[in-house]
Length: 240
Image 1: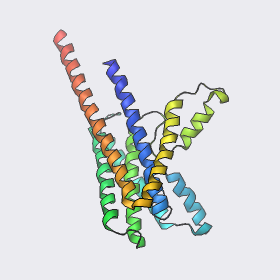
Image 2: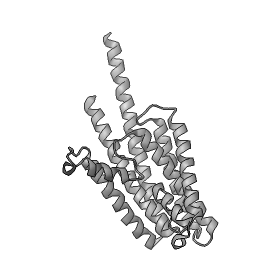
Image 3: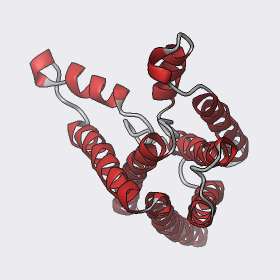
Image 4: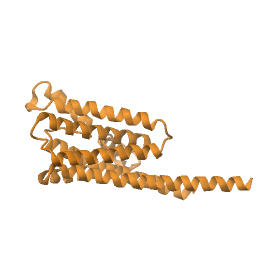
């Protein structure tokens, strides 16, 4: 049972790293394809808004502001749902990530059928929808508590990698996952930038597919662990 527990923790790490890659894709799509808006990295939006308020380089205000608000809405709704379940992966985790999958798929279809670049409102709906899903994802990852992996930002990851390094006199804990998160969000941004050159919806669809794989893999393992725990409890009861 203990070996299975370690395997589950490792699986959760891989799944959150996959979502980190997905965030890189989504942020590249939002920034390059939808008027310089981050839909996953809210730090970027806060900085953009600060510069835009003083007219810096004709930066957008409405879409980053809406993305920030809807990200918080998504995180708040997910937090409310996830709080009803235990920490770690639960049925609520699966439902939250399924929501992200369906939400991203819906936005991908929407951007495939509608020219969202044609009007301000259409583009704002798109970025707000993406930000909502990223908020749900971030809150879900936070509840899952995979050390050092938030899926939506790597600033603290980079800080930890440097400040805990042997160069800084530390022991470099979590260096592999920290380095992986940084590399994957970078790789995701590269893929996202490439998909924007093809079709706007393509990068969003890639993220929806990744989210679906994560949801299914995580839920299957959750069900397996529940059955194993139930079987163990039955054996213990029989021995009493």
